[in-house]
Amino acid sequence: MSTVPQDLRYTREHEWARLDDDGRVTIGVTDFAQEQLGDVVFLDLPEVDASVEGGEPLGEVESTKSVSDLYAPVSGRVVEVNLECKDNPAAVNQDPYGEGWLLVVDPSDPTEYDGLMSPEEYADFLEEEAGEGDEG
Amino acid sequence: MRIDTVLLERASAGARSRPLLRLYSWDRPSLSVGAHQRLSEELAARCASSGVPMVRRPSGGTAVLHAGDLTYAVVAPTLGMGVLEAYRSVAAGLLEGLRLLGIEACVGSRRGRSAPALDERSLCFATTAGADLSVAGAKICGSAQVRRRDWFLQHGSIPLSDPRPLARSLLRFAGSDTSTCVDRIRPGTSWEQLAGSLASGFQNLWGAAAVVSLQEMLGRAGEGGNPSGSGGCLPKPLVTL
Image (cartoon, rainbow over all chains, first blue to last red; front, side):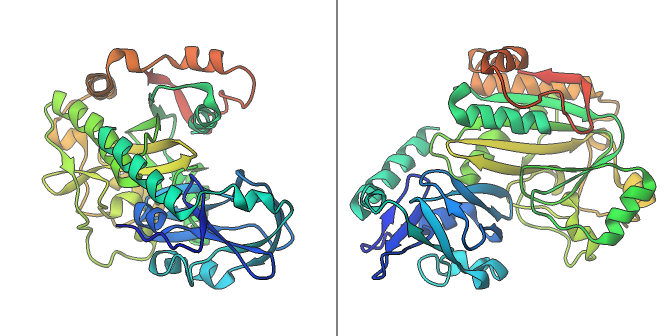
């Protein structure tokens, strides 16, 4: 069973977002995502100062057998990138909500964060996806 | 492989709802390299001096020497499937196609040869991973995937003939005992026979109505991209479902 922390918001593409005290948003991929991906071997992340748009690709995560887009949960400017995680992508598998965070965005539209899925909604979404996967 | 990328982009943008299978071969020995794979300068130099073009795949994984192989590309909706579930879904079509040809394969386990040389770890057929297909423990099909929103593209290679002599002569790889080829299991099998069996295998899995032709697909998708930019792929023989 994947972990879904209660203090985060989520996307349909399995990214998490955390609104920090300074109004910035920290972003990573969920426990479910890292389980599905398998061993993460490479992260393609934007540079600091790059602009990202909510719902649009911001980079890629490559595991041993798959390349997947990463999507920005919110729009804004990248203010920090986890270079240690970029050097050691296994952190995404080992600690997706901690050491495996990916980047921090200064959001341009604070209302976007509120529009992300709540932990309860994301947990329900995971159950729905599991049901579809069983059928597929 | 550029065509495959265009098809994935169009599918993920909502241009289609059904899965698609492409089967093709290459007009000369070529090395396809994983999306973010870094090749050593030495290997790149060997390819250049041997006249082996390198093509960057959008999918992950490691390098594949395409020489006398059948390359497949599946573009399909994820339908909530994770990476391994999607692999298993495609594997079902491949296994059925191989079975129709009289080859009993199975989804391989992670049992690669221990500690291959550094450069050999760059080559897909040097190791067997959980999503690959094997016959009697020897790898016969390696695959790699890329996912865009609710769609995925999976590439794979099935060698008809043993590519290792060529890999040795062109790229100076010592080769691996963990792989096999169609000709070794079913001697005399042609590319067309293999392609026909795989196409039937996927049709048995997805149903004839589940697929449309490439021409229909590209025609319906309208503008965008350059489907003719195939980057080393031979336009025939080509089977598209």
